[in-house]
Structures are given as C-alpha cells and as structure tokens.
Length: 120
Length: 133
Image (cartoon, rainbow over all chains, first blue to last red; front, top):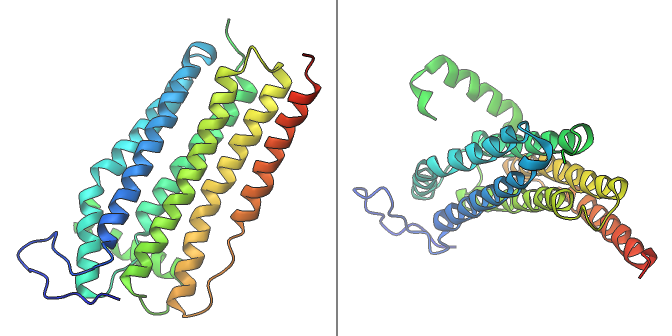
C-alpha cells in the first residue's frame, strides 16, 4: 500500500496515494450524479401521462443531483486530507442523504404508478 | 456541511454518528473510501432499477396490458427501494465491522437483487412466450 510521500501542505488537492482513491471516489460520486439526472429525464416522460405531481419527482431528482455536484469539492478535499493524515471519519451525512433521496424517489414513483390514473 | 460553526448541532451529530458507528477505531481511510465507492455502485444499481421501472410504465403502454405493466413497474420500483435503502445499511455494517476489526458481513442485498431481477426477467419471458404472434 502506498504511504503518503511528503504531500505538499500548500496544495489541498495534493496527496501521496498511488491508488488514486480520492479521485476514484470523486468519479464514483460523479457517475451517481449522472444516474440521478437520467432518472430525472425518465420521470419527465411521465409528465404528460400522470400530471403535475410528477413534477415533484423531476425536481427531487434534479435537486439531489445538484446537491451531490455542489458538494463534490468538499468531499474530494476531505478524502485528500484523510489520506494525508491517515485517518478519516466516514461520510455518514452524504451516504445517508443520497440513500434517503433514492428511497423517497422510489416511494413517490410507486405512488404514481399505483394511484395516479393515466391521462389520455 | 455549511452549519459546522454551530457547535451544538455538531455535538449532536457527533453523538449520533458514534452511536451508529458503534465505537472502535478509525480504519485506514483507503478502506473507508472503498466502502463509499461500493455503496455508490449499489446506489447506481438502485437508480438503474428505478429508471427501468419508470421506462416500463412510460414506454410499454402499447405492448403490455395495464395490469402487467403496473406489476412489472412496481416490482422494479420496489426493488429499487429495497436496494437503495439496503445499500445504506450495508455501508454502515461494513464500516462498523472495519472499525471493530471483525470479518465483513455478507451482502444481504445481493441475493435480493438476484432474485428480484430473475423474477422480473421470468415474468417478461412468460409474457413473450404466451403473447399471440
């Protein structure tokens, strides 16, 4: 395993991890944002059939994607700091928030399919 | 988080976090990051199921009857719900195991995904075979 080799203290993005863990984690969050946007785009397809309520689903998915995107930098620097200091508390807030968003979107989706009639 | 200057809220969050994580010592940050990426892979799986459920309801109206379409869509959405919620507990359990140096728990959501996915596929196969040409 790669030990941090003298990270530059002046640069918050500099780390000595040869496994490139902060970058890979950053990209994994980025892919999750994309998946969220795809879900939002598909919800958009429901709009003409199930009415205005679907707007909340579209907005919810977009808001979740935006929230992930806006906090990307903070998480990346946190990971770099964690690697440099060899200790890092787990990001309970981010994981709980993104899991909760998916659960709420799924629940609203089930409600839409079961209880909102198709409009011609 | 932007409200970190509020020490009271920070303390409360710290207490909740330590209760959820169950003590132990902080593992290698690389393992914590790997666990986070695995969690995100499960979340994307859940989002793909969600998108699948939405697509079935939106695009298959001319192909499937309303009951079958609803059944498949709801099955996929419920699967997305279970995988999405379960992935957080999976992440938490792995984090707890790493902190206490115990063996990692088996992923319960893996067989759920396998059985759920197979069920939806089986329904579609039966539909395709039974459909009049």
